[in-house]
Amino acid sequence: QVQLVESGGGSVQAGGSLRLSCAASGSMFRINDMGWYRQAPGKQRELVATITRGGMTNYADSIKGRFFISRDNAKNTIYLQMNNLKPEDTALYYCNAYVVSIYVTQSDYWGQGTQVTVSS
Image 1 (cartoon, rainbow, N blue to C red):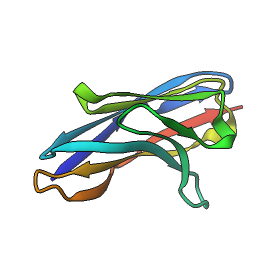
Image 2 (cartoon, rainbow, N blue to C red):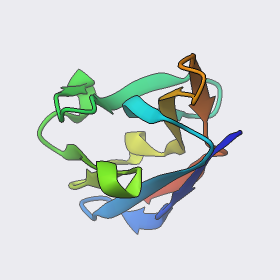
Image 3 (spheres, helix red, strand yellow):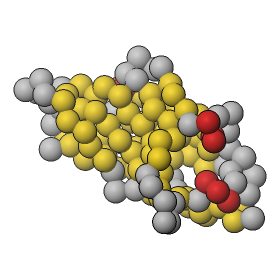
């Protein structure tokens, strides 16, 4: 099994910054795409940013220029640097990973989520 553990959430005032981390562990051959998603109360889960194993990134329009995703393949970890946070960024942030097993099958995994709260 594969576990994704997020950290780095918290409460911050508008304009502040936070850095989220997500570390993958367990039985795996390789991790392909990884990403961050978020879900605000009463809303559907939405894409924040994704990153390929080679470092290609994709961002939601709402956070472009403010959030930056990065990856350390040696540590099986991704990061989300969030700057100039706004109250509308308040949500539960989830890590996602597409993991190839030792049997060369790919599965989709999710972390438990880390809360980000931005006050005005």
